Length: 437
Ligand code: GLU
Image 1 (tube, rainbow, N blue to C red):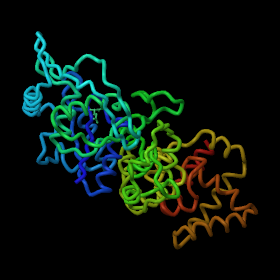
Image 2 (cartoon, rainbow, N blue to C red):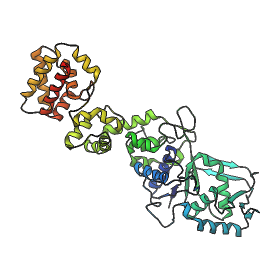
Image 3 (cartoon, rainbow, N blue to C red):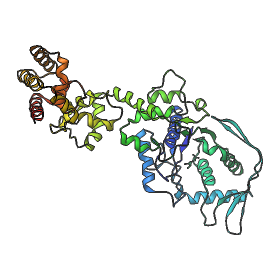
Image 4 (spheres, rainbow, N blue to C red):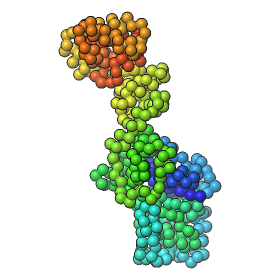
């Protein structure tokens, strides 16, 4: 059975590179009916924080990367925090000592005797990577204070947790010979490795904390959809063997093959990620779209009292936004009449002396509409336009302004229909007053 793991160190937040590593591991496990293990590499007490640990779990869950074993889930190869595995490390150290592969320095540090043989990493992505016998000094694996170093605990855990495939960032490739040397000294079979390319900024520099899109939390906050980010991250370093770029999860799982991962570094492209998000937003069913939008509406103080109206309001502007955080500014006037009025639009409307009379005439026609549907509203607009001798299109900016205070938005009839007849008439009254002021 295939067992893979994601082994983050909780020193910051969930980075886009880490998320993609987790994603590729998850895809591999799901593709082959294996297990995806989450192991927290928290040996560096000074740098690890509870908040960082939580951000990793939250970010993985948001992306839909469920783990089969690990924190909050359990499993029979735990504990899944390195900080709780000291006994296991002690036992493996004893095993290495018994094999004659270690020695202790005067200060108490324990060093591992490198085999100093040529070691080849048979990497699924990078191919065979040969390392000549090392000339580095032997590696400290336990510090004088009794704590263990990364390479040792990483290898012990992969062994103890029965990890069959290690899919991780390319930055670890240069040390992989040390890991294989340790596996050999322990008399254990090393896992199969797949080192995946790094994610760089569009300019080619290494992505750092401050770069746009580097933290998964920033996608959550901006209103990206998990499916869109999932899809986009897959394409950073992997080209599925299929036509197109937009794939659902099941398809991505069925197509995933580490052999198709590129060995060249990937370039992060926020525009493209945003484009993906816009595509996914357009496809959501109105109810699902409203569910996704709710936290953003609430965050802007827009209270959903009428679900049907709210779903229609949000759906009416879905083509205009590419992230959910942009929604409130497009729909806030559906949720109340107390909206701000754009100065520029007001000035434009005031400039035409015939506007108040036109607006008053439409209000009259609206009052006479007996069935307040989109078609009914539209017909009333057309009738008033004909009577006034103008094109219906000439009335639209006027009405849009009255109904929303804005000069852009969804169709006027849609807004009027959704906010209702009474509110529409009140809004026109208010606009007339503003224009006269
Ligand atoms: N804790 C290591 C890291 O975050 C994991 C390395 C590995 O996957 O083996 O880079």
